[in-house]
Length: 126
Image 1 (cartoon, one colour):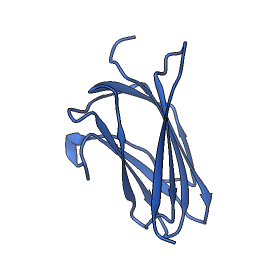
Image 2 (cartoon, one colour):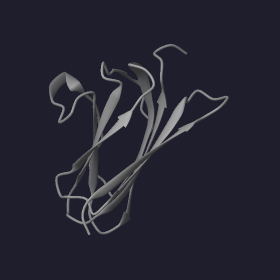
Image 3 (cartoon, rainbow, N blue to C red):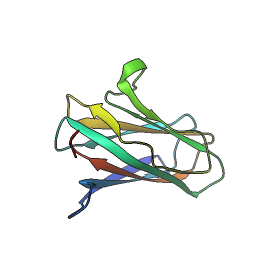
Image 4 (cartoon, rainbow, N blue to C red):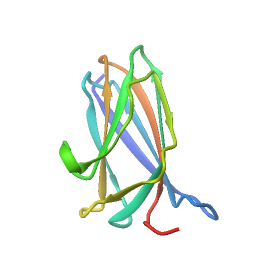
């Protein structure tokens, strides 16, 4: 089976989170595969990042950027490598001129199935 990914955006009513993005990846490649998520605006805050390996054995590190294959200032979040990630940092501000964030779950082994959930407030204000 070849690598595949899907993204689902859910609007969250009456909370500090505007959207929850769920990303499912199957048959990941060691080193990572990049998934783009479409935002509704150019600015926002990442409030929580969860990454779980749902099938396979290994570790994963999540990199989020505002450009494809980001480096330097285009990387807005980078988690530690773990089997399961659940990080709730202070809100990470981002500016994505193309209204996209690029998620790269850098897997330690081929063939992992990975589930990612990212909570985003699509504004810099309260």
